[in-house]
Length: 555
RNA sequence: GGCCCUGUAGCUCAAUUUGGCAGAGCAAGCGACUCUUAAUCGUUAGGUUGCAGGUUCGAGUCCUGCCAGGGUCACCA
Image 1 (tube, helix red, strand yellow):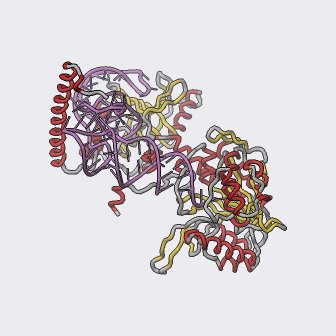
Image 2 (cartoon, rainbow, N blue to C red):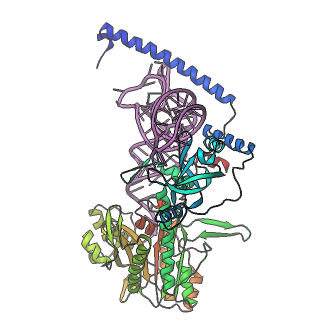
Image 3 (cartoon, rainbow, N blue to C red):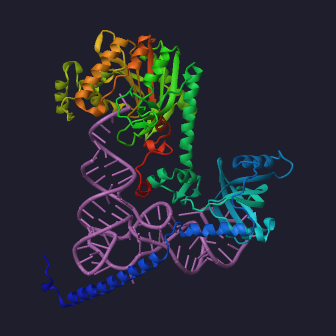
């Protein structure tokens, strides 16, 4: 360890000088801060930033000139892309005179060059350049543009369509007006085109801001808009697929007095006038199957489920599910229909039957691999389930393989853990895993002659679980037994997991429920796969985020 | 809920290693420029470094707590 005693005098002196200098710098810095705080406190709290105040002044200035920055009505003859097409038509001599057009959109860039201004406006279909010259609009209007129009403002512009010397389709503007002034500047996003590739500069990337202010995200990130267009196309394709096959789309209660149909904790709410607690549904299953009792042969619902659980890359508290129930079908038929459905949706949304997800190529054209669960566990986990007929022995052999489990975990849950650990990540190409343990599938029908296994399958691809289906249990007495069994299992576990008996569902089943196959798929995950998004929040417009401090204060 | 990482100007990021006057580009203000396209050139301004404490003569930097986000594990399909 060094000691100052042994330092040469010169070094010692320089250290002292540094120390003394540092002291005065520190002192002046403190004084500066105090001064700043005093002047800051003198100014009242500012709601608007400097940039915003600047734009507010422009609004006032426009109104002084008798110009309303938020007019009621606008005119438009072409969208940006229609205008480009019209220009190309004229260039092919399809039109006799240059095309006149009135366009609207948001100003995304402005390049003033003295008595000439280039600007790009953006509408729902894309961008087009405005060519605004003093020759056409006059000195006064050009001054108005430069002084009071900003990036982000919505503008209406009229003129004729031309191509600039650089070859870009443009509107040579003769008249323009403000149609909506932006107070807050959009988060900067500049595009540069280099050899056909678009390079994005300073785009809005912070995920928190993007999710909390999705409007700004959508406004500056066109690829985000594309994701939600793909999502809309997915919903449309799913509806088309089932409508074409005679299924009827239904809507069942979101507020339910008794929740069920899945192993998940619900959100609880309360009806004031009825003095009744209600649950936000965790699944549609029990209501949809009641409808088969009522005589519909195929029903489906696309809607929101709510599960009071952890949030991560693949889980949002509310998520969209598609469920269908199909009378006179079994899980084999449902597998066939699932293959067909996923292929159809991919074709409609992406235009092809192969998708790339996070670097994995998934082929949806071929039939899916079908693997019996016990075979998969034997092959991929190296455990023959027949050798471990009870939970205790299975937990022990799993522990040898490094999988810890809580004492008393039911055998079915252990098997499910094995699937998640050893099988799921390997299922890159579409795979059905079928024949599940009964104790984690209380609504599924037994495999004939085997009381421990049910006719249930799950579908996987790209290492992700996508859907879940079974030959539905339609024996009311067996169903009641299963409910009681499940209630006992969870009763001993934790109150949280306890599922109440749905007596009305049993009554419905006692009237007679046709044999049927049922199915559920996470639409968000399907959209993730189709749009190659690694996070569920990228496919949900307004994903749930924790409240921020200032928002909490308002409560 | 556990562990790891992150939070700096409207946006994207430096400065944190080793404590010593918080910077740049874009956006913004002013000026020049009649075919630009991240236009260019000149110039000006812009900060509670997530919040609150602590250590220190001095903290964006070190320590503690909190808030938010990301990742991961657990829970959960």
